[in-house]
Image (cartoon, rainbow, N blue to C red):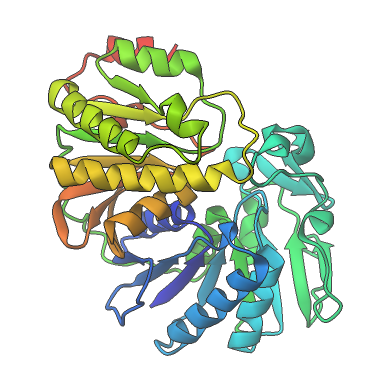
Length: 397
């Protein structure tokens, strides 16, 4: 068994999609880690949203549990642009598993995200000059990987190229300019080295070790009629895109002002919103919940809104049987799962890179599809196969 600890849910699901393509039996768990016959066991945490000390404590606990299963190796999935408590979590995992060093390969050339001479670029633009610099929760202030991650006296941090000599101790952030660099770095991982980074690096590790499972495709449940979309990520939304979706048969429900701007709103407003969504699902079948408003001055509003959304989805599911739940953003997904008491999922198909559709353990008639907030939804999640291609092309314009 291969084990993965992911710092958010959509990262876990993205790793699950890679496992599916390799023919592996994949299970994603969020709590109460159980012994499993899975080829790939992924633990989805939300450590990116925690304080560093809390995140480290959780990583120690998870690592201790996973080591009892004697995995082939444990991979640490981190945010591809290095947001979160990465250094603290890696140190906690290394100390628990008695490893001397970690190689962090965060770049993913598939998305034109590269690291060159220790500088992170997206589409050849330095990271600190991209949208990620204005991320309301995790703003990136530097394009230098060493400045982003920070250093610790006991665990030196270095930025190196794939051909450089590796230190025996510490954390190494690798330069990656293309897929060939991913392969070179994967070749340098040994038992004393904790591999960490992007889904692209994980895929390279599987290829390096020639890990292939049963190629038979898992049973796929047909896409159901009643679908609720939660566009809860912080990545900028295209207003025209949302309007086009509405014009093409989807119902759009934006968070009410009374809830967004007032943390002490009347709880009955959530009930009223849930009732409206249920009525809309019965009428339109496909309903989109969006969070598009002018910035609020409320501290930590994103955390509060995610909790509101989690409670909202719970209320909707208490009122109607959904077939499909589609959520963007790992933190939003984790909160919704917590409110629905969902702890185990089985990935069954990759709709696009990072867009993974899953069965839910214990809820056989509901499927969950997730994606990272900065990725794009493929057309297939908005339209059933019988929609004319001209309509899909019109939406994408």
